[in-house]
Length: 448
Image (cartoon, rainbow, N blue to C red; front, side, top):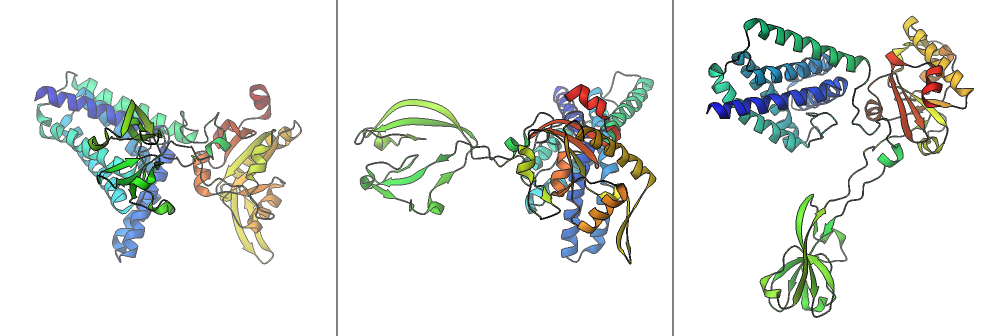
């Protein structure tokens, strides 16, 4: 039993470290996922007259960012302590509490189809709600022996080294998490990573779907699933009307299948089946067995990216991405980063803050200097009120073109608002957090 417990201890510890590091790399992205969970729960509670439960959910959604940073650091530290066997009485309790919390989230998400992906491993490894729930169930199975035998798990480290390990790992990984929040993720696994082609990521990835027609032979009544409707169809009874696409038996598989290439002796037609019934051995010639990976079409990585003009409402994205010049795209999800809007008798006016003015002056200088060197530039925002946009442009003395974009895409595009992206045609070649906006001399040196 000792060896089994130690094996579970190492495996659970490694998985917690891996999961924590992936999310520590992108704490803002993890906070978006937690916020999505809590907002969905609050919505359900409100719809079922349980507002006393919805209020805590709304509050937790409000503090999703600090909560996400605490959780990821806790995951990593617990993983390290588990492997080293440090303070397993407390550590096993924290492991159990944490995994029960995640299991509750993933179960409800799977059962009621609330959140499409759990964010357990960030964008590095996207799991479905059911896969996430099963992962947590397996982890519970691994953690329970650690909790049951927690008193017998000892470490070889001295009490001083134990304390130093706890403090050192907590500080180091908090600083790493905070750095990724204040700048950009060290590793970018999203569809807008440097080097990615946006147009390519907006395409459907063609799969290799297997379409099987389920048919019954009139002579002997044997049912078979065949990939091509046979030429000698008069000898077969159709289970489904082939003219009605909704009735065609269609199997979407994403696994290895043993496919038998066969030839129908009566017609010479070659096709594929998953199995040749014993009754057909004399009618069909099996001339090759193989294993082929079949998979359905995959949705585009980028689903809802648009650039709707504030002038006429038309989507200008294709034209922007077809332009072969260098282009800066400033992502501003909320214009209030630079100041506040006020409603006056003369309409909406924008009151810039000193911090906002200083920040925008830096980006405006970059735009002006880059424009004289042949660069294009524009702003992507979720703001749809043209009066606010015009008030902002007037106060900031800027003529840059604004385009409206889906907020989820902007959050996915760059973990910073404002954030800066540099494109060469449709390829991402640079990304910067607002704390790291470059000057044009750096751009010329590095990119042109």
